[in-house]
Length: 306
Image 1 (cartoon, rainbow, N blue to C red):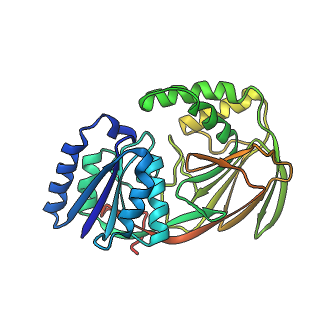
Image 2 (cartoon, one colour):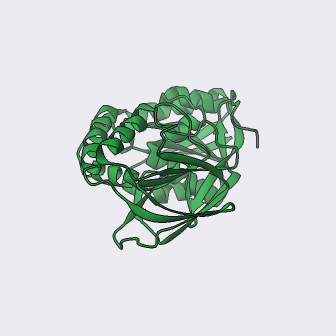
C-alpha cells in the first residue's frame, strides 16, 4: 500500500521531535511490511490544504496523519468526505481517536502497529453536516476550553494545570441555558449546564473517550444545573474519570438527536472535537455507521472488519 503522510510540525510531541529523522524511520518501518510512503511535513497553518491534496492525490492509497487531536480530527473529516482510508500517528496530549482505535500512543510504536494493521470501518458523526470523531459540546465544556485556550501552557502537564485553573474561573457563575432535545423517543425540554453528544458511548476512566466506535450510536450526556461548588467537583471528576453515575448527569443512547436553543445568545459558542465554533439555534446530529475507513492494529476486539 502507498501512503501519503502529512505531519503537523506544530502538533503536540512533533514540536520537540526531529521530524526528518522520524520520517526516515517511518519509511523504514513501512518498507519492512511491503508499504511505501511519501511524507510531507507542514506547519499548522498549511495543514488542511495539504491534507486535502494528499487525499486527492491519485497515487495515494491511504492518508497517514500525524499530530495532535486537532490534526487527527481534521484528517478524519477530509477522509470521510473523500473516501480515503486514514492511518493515525498520535502525537498530542489526549490522543482520543487513537485511544478508541487501540493504537499505541508512542509515535514509533504506532507506526509499527499500523504497518502490520488492517483496514476497518468505524463510525463518524456529523453536526449540521460538520463531521466529528469525538464529541459536540455546549455549556460548561465549551466555557472551560475557551478560558483554557486564552492561557499559555506547554505540554500535557501544562494543559492539565491550565484546565484546573479554567475550572475555577468557569464555575464562578455556572452556565445555565434552555435546551430542547429531540430524539425518536420525543422531546425533552429542560435547563442544563452542559450537553455533550459523543461518537458512541463514553467509557469509564481517565480521559473520556469511546472504548469502541463501531456500534453505530451516539451518546447524549446532559449536565443538570448545579451550584458552583458542585459543578467544580463534577469537572474534577471528569478529569479523574469518576464522573459516570453522577446523579445530575444523564446518558442516552440514540442514532439521531436534534438540539434547539430557543434563547441562544448571538455570541454563544459550541465545541466540535475541541474546536470552538458559533452555536447555531438548531443542531442536528447523526451517526454514520462505519462510514470512515481507518488502518488499525490487528488486535481489534472492539472494531469490526469493514
